[in-house]
Length: 179
Image 1 (cartoon, rainbow, N blue to C red):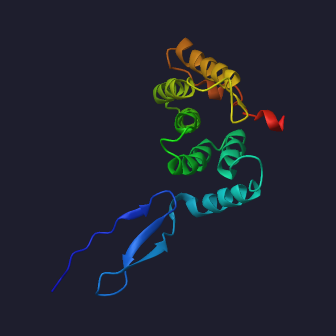
Image 2: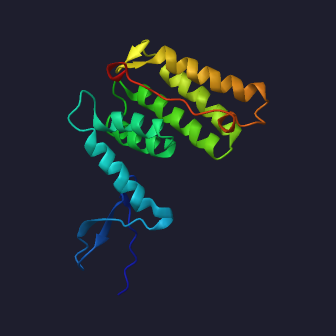
């Protein structure tokens, strides 16, 4: 008898998959090997970065977000913080983390010259960050909102036709505890 089975990706961001290992349909969990576009090298680099951020005042993923963002590794910044956010959805920092994730996503779109989606994510980032105090988790949100408004203005000034990231350096984000 032929049995057709489907496998569900258990944790898309970590690469865990379920695979059958006997006819009783038990499953073992294996780490999926990433081979496309050098993803395994990036994953190792990000894991090393998070390891270096352990034992500090904030979660290592939160700190890793800023490390990646400031190195213009915006996609990796998004991924690192998303991992923290997924474990804390609907908690007090839900919108805060989503806002920062969207901010990194906006710069990913700028890097890929997708100006319309970048503008949309800047607006979404501002919306998610708006309910938080001016200083939250040691991040000066007045400065972050000014950054968002500035980049959004540059996009809208040119009717979303010219990429401001090609004309100037990407911004840096700093926590107040690390100035």
